[in-house]
Structures are given as C-alpha cells and as structure tokens.
Image (cartoon, rainbow, N blue to C red; front, side, top):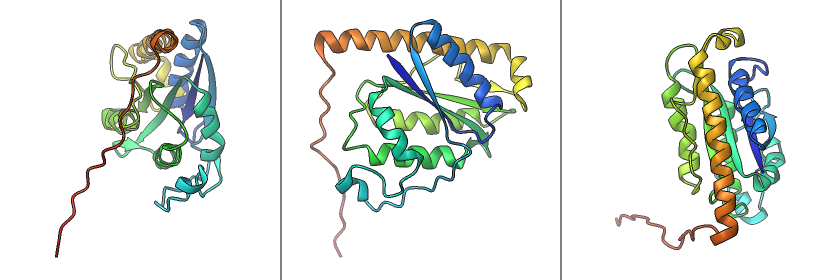
Length: 209
C-alpha cells in the first residue's frame, strides 16, 4: 500500500515539509509506503478549460501534472501539503490540483482512495486552506482522513515547528488514522468491492431569451 505525498511549498525544507515528514514517518512505521513529489518550486500554470484531456487522457500542458497522474492512479491515497498565503493555499498547489483532478476525471477512478490535507501557517488562515484542499477529495468519492485537530502545524521556520508539539502530535495521529483507513478499505475492497458511483445525471439550468 502506498500514499502519494505532494509538497506544495517552494521551501523544500520548510514548515510544510516538517509537518509532512512527521506524517510520512508514521505511515512507514505502520507499514505504508510513501512517495514525495515537491511541486512548490515548479512552474505550474492553471487549468484553461480547453478539454484537451477529454480527448487525449492527459493535460495539454505536459509538465509535473502529467508526470504525477500515473503515480496517483497507482496510489491508495493522497496527502497534499501547502503553506498559507493570504489565508489560502499557495498558487502552485491549487493550479496543480485543478489540473490533476480535472485531467484525470475520465482516466483515474479515485473512489475510496483516501485524502488528507496538511497545512502550515505562522498564525491564521490555515483552516480556510484546509477546506480548499478537502474539496478536491469530496468531489471524487475520496474519504477524508481526520486527526485529533485540524491537520496543521504552526511556525515561521521549520525549527519553530519543532516547538509545536500539538501540531506534530496531530501529524502522527493523522498518519496512524490514514494507515488504518487505507488497510480497512483494502480489506473491504477485496471482500465486497468499492461502492457504485452514479454519474449519469448532470444538472444544468438554461435560461431562454
């Protein structure tokens, strides 16, 4: 079993990385493999709604998004880490997620892959960034993994995060809960399969005139 870990921070050894490392360590202790992909230092443009992916099964912009898609397909879950900029996620993380989820909507069955957000902030804005990332999971039939607090660490530097004992505790509990859920879903998948997802109805409202 394997979890794909996305670091949206441009600081590869910063606060977000420190939180993610605590989760990764806990997952691996509990028998779950992890693979890290750092995207915060990449040039990632946003989705332009061209629907190239609908015909070709990949995004028109051939970058880290297309490189990540097959790894996402093989993973049992996804962790997305982001620093907080102006009470929200950073731009690379959101552009990456928009394109990854949209371009794979017809090629990757995300049903029952587990998802978790990990947020770092100096003080405030973490819960709104947390909500932003979780919405990608809820639209994709992906169970969200919870912890014993919102999945966040606090600090201005990675050294500061070392002093956020509750934050690091939250990361460890997140790792344990994710390992448990991935294993439980794995057993259920073998025993009864995954739930059917109806996708035949698509409500649109049109105005005349």
